[in-house]
Structure formats: structure tokens, C-alpha cells
Length: 117
Image (tube, rainbow, N blue to C red; front, side, top):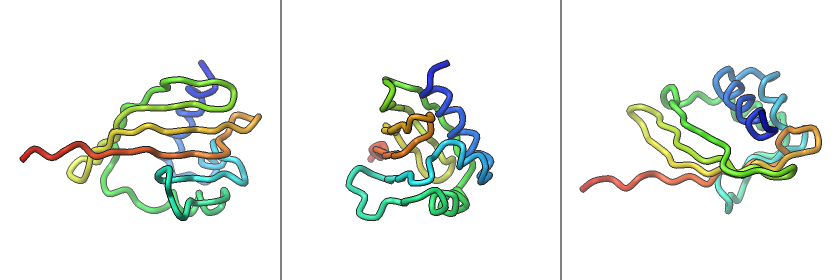
């Protein structure tokens, strides 16, 4: 298993559990969490990320995410996240790694599919 695959497994565990220990296992103390590349107020620091992750999801997410490309510093993850009855997103994530394998910066690039007219 690659570093990025291990990180993605940990991210999904943290996302599902919302447990502080799980969240801290995938983000560094000074991590940055960007909801989009041009985010004017990213979430900075592990305590703020833990707090943000406590917010409830609109519904139980169904995800299909895979590592597209990676090296020692960066992984690109792609896939979909569906919140049944709410919204479906196509995603590409940048995960910038610290030397210990946790994310020091996470950037979401997400799109919603076009609505049929």
C-alpha cells in the first residue's frame, strides 16, 4: 500500500468516525484545509480542523475515491462523493504531505454535475 492510499484510508476513517484521534492521525498540527483552491478563509491548524469536522453531514456520504498520482510530497485523489437526497460532487483533492505522512495542506477541487433540464 502506498503512502497516499494509507492516508486516504485514514481520511475515510476520520471522516466516518469524526473522532479527534482519527482526524489528528491524518493532519499535522499546523495543517491547512482549503475547501477550494481560492478559499479566502481556509481552516488552519489541527484544533480548527477537528472542530470543523464535528459539523454534521447533510446525509451519510457515499464515496468512490482513488489515488490518481503521487510522489513523496503530493498526492492527487479523484472520485465522487454523493450525499443522497442532497448533492453529488466530482472531486479532485491535493494532499501535500509532511515527512511523517500526514497532510500539511489539503485542497479540494469539487464540481457539481450539470442538472438535466
